[in-house]
Image (spheres, rainbow, N blue to C red):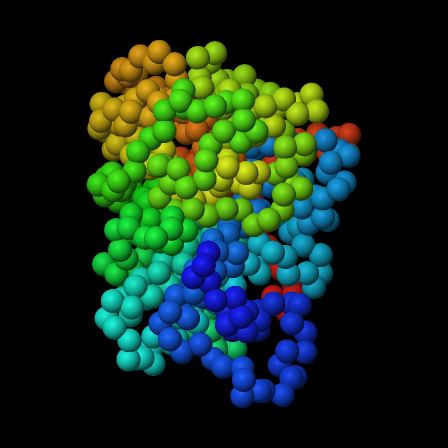
Length: 438
């Protein structure tokens, strides 16, 4: 990204980087300047490696993959604990990348918002653009934290989990805490304030547009069980210039058949770099899931390949082994289908599902379901098949448990023993790292 200003961004964000031990002890130099121009602050928000990343824990906790015992032992201790569904996977004093990286994203947004609070003499266009993007990324970060570390609002108690609230980049600023309800009030407030400021198109899909805002709001409201709002924002996404890929036109013999920045992508983000977890020779697809795809279903051929005698995933929307966690048109259509069915508009909901499946299944004949239970089951079945390896499964399991009282029992083998996990709401909050609590 040519707009990234590595030196200035590094200096500003170094305060959050563990490798900068002793940074605060160094004598300031006049040659080290604080960013001042709108372009420099735009570069900070465009720093893809610090902003456009998502936590890997939701992927590890999901039932999207399994691995062998030999592969498991290659992972870091907290990855191994998470694989066994420990909700307290961290060692004492450890601040792992899930927690650190998401708060660094929030810190980055707050750096820009703090500067804007000084009323710099920049153009209105620059001010609006920076404010919209910073609010978007702060909301994005807090949503990730809420899904991982907080109760779902539908099952939260007054004494529920809390996370630190950072609304300023100043290191000496007071730090409060947010419970689940307060966190989502902040998330929705930030995103709704960002919408009128975001542009409909951006130079790169790594930069948030107004349609990325609509797509993220559709995802969030689906999680909360606010189906009317999930529909409202999903429909707004359809006004954008996004198109479904016809999977039959892709070369399924390629190692990674789906290009990054393809026509379906609304916002491009990826899982933080833990390639050893998601690598082709490490993360294998559960046979029952793989066998649930029909013979004519192009998703099976496009998504899965044989690796070391097991099925691994190759259908990333990144064109590489990195797991895509962004917002794409297929997810939005599935949001619309589910929200429509859940609110009684079954025919319209099936219409959105059929629109997707015509581009996913050979010789597809439209589904014509009128029973709400069967229609919802069909939508959720295809959501599972379409959004595998997207980092969304843990979010879905958590909302099913809270909104629908649907508890699933997940199973894995570890150390020669079967490990099980019940997706009850009270089981699905990760503990804040002990070092942060202290």
